[in-house]
Structures are given as structure tokens and as C-alpha cells.
Amino acid sequence: MRKTKVIILILVMLSAISSVFAGNRGAIHSVSFDFYGDTFSVNNVNIKLVDFESNLSEESISEFYDKMKIGGYEPLILALSNYRHEHKQDDWLFYQLVRNTAQILSPKASNYARYTLYKWFLLSGAGYDATISISDDKILFYAQCNEDIYDIPYHTRNGKKYVCLNYHDYGSIDFKRTKFREMDIEVPGAVKAFSYKLTSLPRFTSDDYSEKELAFNYQNVNYHFTVKLNAKIKSLFANYPVADYKLYFEMPLSNETYKSLIPQLKDNVRSMGTRRGIDYLMRFTRYAFLYQPDGKNFGKEKRLLPEQTLLYEGSDCEDRAALFFCLVKEIYNLPMIVLAYPEHVTVAVKFDKPVGTPILYKGQQYSICEPTPQKRDMPIGATPSGLAYEVAYAYNPE
Image (tube, rainbow, N blue to C red; front, top):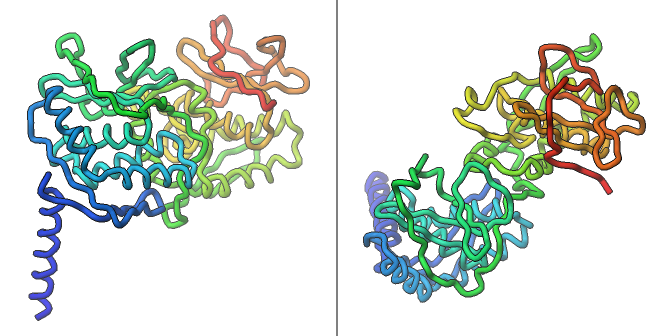
């Protein structure tokens, strides 16, 4: 009897799934899924699922869009936008919410073009200026963006830059041999620029975290830390592009990670003066983590957020500079500049009085605090000799 009930339940579930993904023949009345420790849910809707089995063309995509417009998606888009405002989501997190929603409605593995069109429709419906470009068998999804992004394709239209949000799905494309044409489909109200800036991370649950032990020696004293870290950070930022340093250096820590690390560091530097305390943070960042270049770690250039540097076993100079910047900002909140050399990135801090050989920037003196291991020990104020640099980012608390 129990086995019969199980079989009936499975048949009912399969029937529901086939109904949901039957293209125009199916409809759904609720959408609900876990989203990084929270639940996104919308009920009492009547969404008609639109299929896309045609070849990629402006005509077929226009037909898809026309069907979506009358498919009852307004309540869903409103729910997505309300969730974003309620949780104060930045654009990158909102895009992940859109991706998850598209995956529920039109699974990526079943029909990649349809999945991409669903993302475009939902993001555009939420007010973002997004476009579609196609070749014979490829579909690229772009969003208008005012920031400098370095490792994904972009094009300009009417003086505006559009960056590709799904390039990672193809790995690489030879744009000289593969010609794309942009679809001329106007979505009313889709005017917002997309930004990669993040001011907060999701409200992960405590169960999402695991503990990691960190240790280093400072002036013959061994310091040990138990830091709470969340592996979901890896998936959340797996496709985050190489962007302006400012975006990485201003990235916050998640709440649990912050509470497990920053108070410990504050306690350890409490009795130290500012200079010695920053020297402590510099050497913590320098020696509590293994050095590993991006090529060996990821097979390509990748800039890590401060929390990712804590999470991964290995990191390079850009990653440590971002973490050190974050720690100094949280504990001392002093003016800082990010120095980009041809093969290196480091940070200089503005003290009341400069230390060592100062870096002069806009009439102010900054002292280099090297957070990455070097061939020689570099105290505060030591500078690489004979190397040209540029100030990639400047931070002033005021």
C-alpha cells in the first residue's frame, strides 16, 4: 500500500512538471525557491509559459516577446522588484534573483535560448536597459552599464555601453569570425543602467557557515582566529567579472564573517597605536594566507572580494590588497589609495605623519603598507624601487 502511494505521488509530480514545461500549453500559479538563506515566493498568479523552439531570428524573438507580454508576468515582475526593494538588493544580487526565477520557469539545460530570453524579459520588465544579440546558433544578453568591465565583451549603442551578462556560458567567442546582430525590440520603461557595485551581501543563515582556522605570528606572538565563512559566496560570485578596483575594495563582508573576524582584530590592536595596529593588519593579511597567482588558482585573471580572500586557500596581490583595505577601513577608517604597478597592486595609508618614503597624491602624503609577501621584508613606508605606478582608486572617509 505504501509503495502504491509513492508511485502515485511520483506520477502526480511528473504530471505537474510536464504541465509546467509544456510551453504554451502549461501555466503556473506560484513560484517559490530558496535564495541564499531566504525564500522568494509569489502566489496567486496565472503565468502562461511560452516556449521557444524556433531558430534564432528577429522575427522569432519578437514573437516570443509578444507572447510573454500577454502571458500574465506583471505580478511576478512586481514581486521581484518588491523583493529587491525590501531586501535592498544591489543589481548583481537582483540579477541572481532573476536568474533563479528564469531557471524555475525555463530550465537552462532544457532550452538555453529560451532560458536567456526569459532572463532578458524579466530584467527588462524590471526596468533595466537590456538587449539581445544573435548569431546563427548563439544568443548574447547585454545590459547597459556605466562601469569599466574588463574580461567580458561589450558594445556601444547611442553613446551607451552594453556589457554581456552571459558570455561565461560560451567560454570564448571569436567575434571576428562570428558576427552578431542586435535585436531592435523596444521594451517600455527599460531605461536603468546595470551596476556591479555591491553595498551588502545576502542575509545568509547561520547554518550556511563553516569555521576556518587562520593563524600568523606577529612580533614572536602566535595569533589564532576562528572565522565563519560561507561557501555559497563562491557560487554567488562565480561569474562576477574583472571590474574597477573600486568595486572590489568597497565590497562589504557578510554579517557572520564580519562578526567572527573584525571584533577579534579590534581586540588585538586595541592597545596598539595606529601605526603598529596597521602594521599588525598588514602582516596578518601578508602571512595568514597562502600566496597563489590567479593562473594557478583559477586558470585566468580573477579578482577576489575580501570575503573570497578569506574563503579561498590561495590569493594574489590584488586579493590581499582588497582584504587589507577592508580591514583598515573597518577598524581605522583612514584615507587610502590603491597603487597599481605593471605587475603588482598594493595599498598606501595616510597617517598623521608619513612613515618611510611617502607617496604624494593630491597634496597628501601616503605610506605604502604592503599586504603581499615579498622577497624582502617590507615595513610600512618601504616602496618598490624604480617602478612606475598609477593610483587606481582613492578612498577618503569624508
